[in-house]
Length: 128
Length: 459
Image (tube, rainbow over all chains, first blue to last red; front, side, top):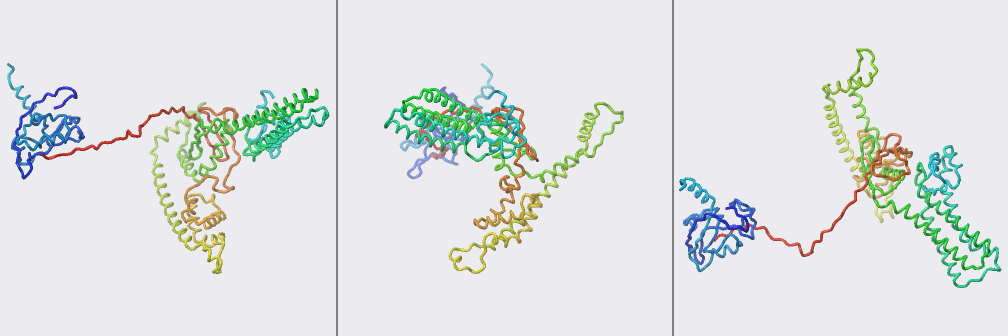
């Protein structure tokens, strides 16, 4: 998940589809985000590289749509419905997630354990 | 005036700082009999010479104006308004010159320095040279030939006064202004207790630097108290007193050095517990001082509550028992006298303060509405030497000990001593480094800030 500014990022991602839950007038997803290019990235407890200004999941409410769909705390959100989340401000990220006319958000998230799993599976595979 | 007048003037020990160098003009004869009568006569000699030179300066231009009128009045051409203007300017310039000369040279003698002041010597010499050359010209060109152009003569006199004013300007710059810019930083250490101060001085000769340092010494350094040093001396005596060296192998030629080395080695090996004694003794002393001080503060505060200043309207109709400050001081002094005396004994200051001085100080504090704390301040903390009245000054005779000649200028790394009867001030000088200041421009609108946030939004 470490990145070099200006270079393309290459990570292993997981596709997560969350159905928004209607709660009165609001559509909620059941998680909280932190981070953004206008925030202080040094205080992010989930990132490996403290200069990473991406959007991270800081809290997942129990039993909410996000937890059901497989989102975990500490995940970094790379895309939301095709919109890039690696170089956005906090407010832009919030807006992309809370569009009123969408019922479903399709996220691409990455986490450390995904990389480890892929590496382990590559090592266990006998080389063809 | 050649290059050995420095040597002859070393025989004079009472030469004051305010001398013009008219010493050498007055002849070397006086200097050689200097040490015998080095009292008041020689101290006032420079002032006398200054006054003589001043008189010459005053008389010369007037003589230039008056002599032609006296000697060949009928042949002089009358000159009208131009001359009158010149007379006026001459009169005012002469007045200004005399006032300025009085301000700069005729001042009470500050100190007696070991050697003459070089700049003043040079200036006196320059003035005398100028006067002599003008008299020479006057004598040859005007008196002998009996010049008729009176306006020319008046202009001659005015030019002399102008030149004298410029010499005075030179005197101001050399004597007063040049040493104002700080150039050296000197470190002054007292040899007995190590008290250190730093001062900034300009470009001065060693003897003048010593004078400045002494003037600072009297107001900055706390008073030298020999009673505080006895403890260290007794400890030092005890260290080596217990060891005696016996030479068993017969007397050798280098007995002294080998004995002292043996002593040092033995003392180092000995299990020395004197540091323990020192620690407990100092702790005990501190405790005693603090106790006495607490008693003193309470006694003084209580004493001060007994005295009240009479208000204006009460003075007019006296209650009958009023006192002036001295009597008031005498009245309340007994209640605090014992506590004060005990405190001074414990801190070994009792010889610095006499009964009279304490009562005088008390009267002073009462007159000026001071608090008890203000009264006690001069007894709780040792103050500078100037505070203790004339009898506590202990030394007005100082000896300057220096490897370089005392009229040579101060340099980086100069060291000299100022010896007084009980102690010694060791002075080292360092030059102030060349400082390079560069600028950085800050636009007034360039101060902008953002908040460092870490917000968390739930979606």
